[in-house]
Image 1 (cartoon, chains in turn yellow, purple):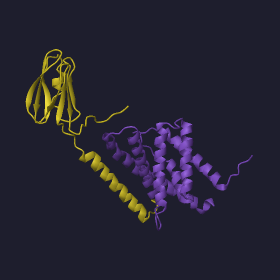
Image 2 (cartoon, one colour):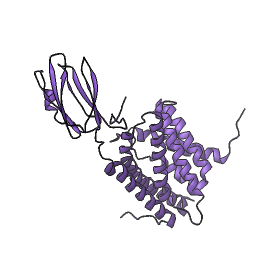
Image 3 (cartoon, rainbow over the protein chains, first blue to last red):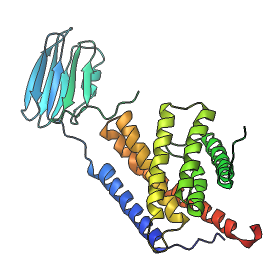
Image 4 (cartoon, rainbow over the protein chains, first blue to last red):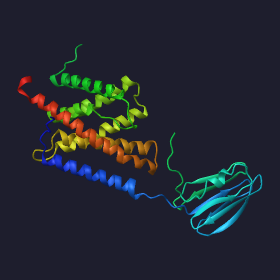
Length: 127
Length: 171
């Protein structure tokens, strides 16, 4: 049986502070941080780069290398709906909602990148 | 020419050698996450600081960081800077705790507080120097949890060492 050494009041205060600090850390960095809802998207193609706000519902035709990609915007989200490419990966990416999300049609050279107004884009950089 | 050495010098050399050995053995252990390791060398620093006062703790810790990095070939590398910043953080906490009024805290308190000081200082330097991104903060709770656990462990070991040190059998 391991016998715990006697502790003083200061030890207990240190342990309490440590536990309090730790709970605060978990609360602040794990639970409170929600994903940033994207506010606008930058759509780029070989012929244009345009910025669209995501609160305006609309359909857009974006001309790419192969033809027109169709993009749908609906209350804070955006997706590819039609594309002249073969594999339709861009359409399968589905709705994009979070700042930093990205979808692209490589054959047609059209891409969508989502941003929020703080300019938050990347989750992390490692090198 | 012979350099005059005193009793303290010998004591520092012995204990620093012990701390360096523990440090190097520990660096060979696999870690689940970069930045998480038991920090057993801190046992020596805590014991020394409690038994002989914090100035000697600085000697042991400083020698461990410098000699340990020379032996492992990381001297003046980013690893060294992180190791040094951790040691500074943990020593600052130990110095602060040694001025507590009354009975102060035991090795458990030293272990926990200095481990958390270590990890916070190291994290802060890593954040400032290498990756300044908020995403990095999400790993902080895990690092501090590990620091708390390992701090309790090193504190416990340090208190056992001190117990043995004080025991009449050794005198």
